[in-house]
Length: 443
Image (cartoon, rainbow, N blue to C red; front, side, top):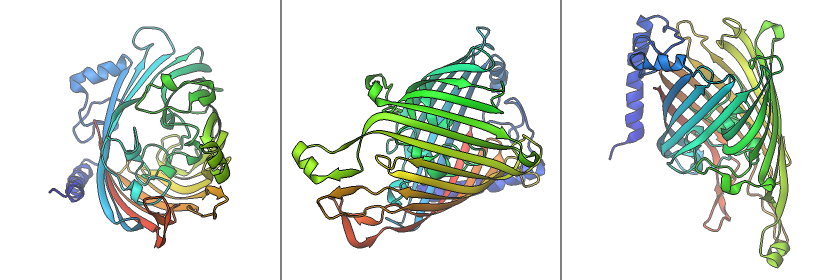
């Protein structure tokens, strides 16, 4: 049987050696605003499709696709030492209605996504997946779904509306150094988006909202107000679960700053869901008398993040080094993520001759709310979770990126559980050390 993770690693190292030498000979890659260019310097592997792709982009239609593969292993701690290999493909289409020759202010977006293989996520004992890439579009399923299909219409330079199936992760909690689905920056979900939002804001869901641009420029400031279906999933259209008592109301604002003449951003958001959730506090007498578990009506969460450049090659270029941080707070019941903190350093293009390389070092801490059961002896199943991650994203070409990664995570799960969900005495889940390698191809 082929050992896939060794085969992948060997191929990746070979590609890294070949492309690094090639790019060194070519000095800096040519920076294009189109898909054209030489094989090693153009922005995508498949290029401009004989000019058709550039022509479509000029007329308002862009098609972007990527394939991200990750091999990752637990080399100490966690539940088990093992390696897993998996990947995710993504196709995103954007259409500018005005450039198509129709009306002004309209934009259509569709995203197709699917994954394959497996991850080590279940074996770390952590609440936060160490491989974010593998949990989309549906965690634990190798499916092909359409997580986003929506339309935006601006009525002025200051105001627009959006509606349809929304990819909430792409559009919220933005951060220059720590954001996304684990395909470009950090692998760990804790650095992609604030986890206090997970219970009330599903990744893919039906929704509608307002987009407000106070200064006309979305890079300066943007405010969003939205109502979304709390029960949304990527593998369902979601119309059958629409109900007023299953709605999340969310507000978020992001503003660019200019402290010390350097680019920075501050973002704050709040969400409230009207859904009835299973309470983290359960009374055995209530369960026996009613035959059902206790419910908790509604949940709320507040989240904040910042990024601040400490050095920029050129203001607004996105090349430089800086710091980032996140804070989140929730009601603590039904949301098990009571408080969340993260901080780190990130950068891009700071090494001469490597303008597209990225790196990041980060630490996170989660104050975990333990479930409690009255009338029986109280047991503590969970503990607070914390983790560290460091990665370096080598841009072998603009369309091929290789990223070694290391994570050290003290997981929330304290002990191994038996088949009935009871802790096994003297069998602890220890701090996990996770090594990984990611290869992304942009088509």
